[in-house]
Image (cartoon, rainbow, N blue to C red; front, side):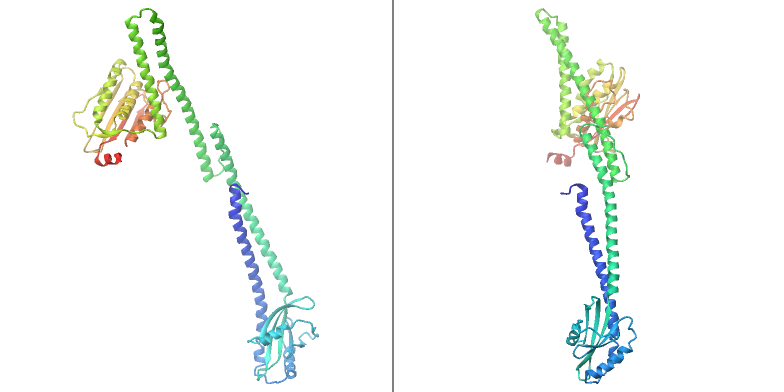
Length: 483
């Protein structure tokens, strides 16, 4: 069984091509044969048409008188070199020929009877002489004024030369057909190879990539769709390699993030256990319990962040949407992080607006998570005495459908080459700062689930500005989301 592109090409294109060429060759051969035979017949019928004037109103009642007149016609016939003319009597026997030789009585003269029985009084016949020579004959019956057949004149042309020319022309047509088929097969094979070979190479390369070999390169040979596919697979391999590296870095960072609080918890738990036999001073006990509680909360946050990321990746994150006051949710998050900013000697600036904001339709806890992730990042990358400024705006005149929250810091900033990638999974622009690198990706996905946008502007040494845009609640949107 033929398989692959080559097999399909042979079964579809080549079989159809062969069939078409056979039909064309057959048509040409038949057409050529028809033209040659038609030319022979036309020559004979043209010569025979002269009889209508020579024997017009013929009055002889017996075949002897006809034979004499016909013999005279044959002797004066002008095209003896092209054809042989015969005089046939009323019984169908040949009595005279233009060649002057006696005619073999065994020669086929069935055309005479066919002409007598014909309404038109003539007949054409293809036959072979006793010597084996192929001929075409045309015979016309001569009748007297009483309608009695007194004889006939027969014209005979040898078709041996015609048949030889036909054989030569047929051979040329067949050769041309085979040559055309060969050229088509040759060019088609080259074309198929130009597709099959790169596709096989692409398949091998894709198989290597599937098994983790991202360093495999594909040589681009053609500037066409195959070349574009080579470029696409090469780019995919680079992206997969980069993603694999980011994943490995992510696993390493998460392992470190988990190890640090676990080490602190384990260390203080062992200290308190060993000190349990003797009285432990209150200050040391409170400090140890504080570290355990703090690091346990940190572990919980990391695990929740990973679970959220997994839910988003698999499309299993479900929002519990409700009508909420976005200003109150932001106030609560800022209140939670104020003490941290003070402890880290950083300035968290926020002026609560006095105007009333329209409600937002969304998940209260998820939006809080977004604010916490973004403000936490801002504090994390801002040095001591640095500033993190938060602003919330609603402009009914210019942007009546959205609420904008802006978080600006004076931290280290993000390099231009890293900025387009900071919202990607596993990506972490600054490896020196602790963190899993997926918090911003999770925040961006949550904002998108709320039909909003999360934009980042940054520059190295000038800080970062994160702008969160959320749509306000409308009757149409609430009814649509509730369906």
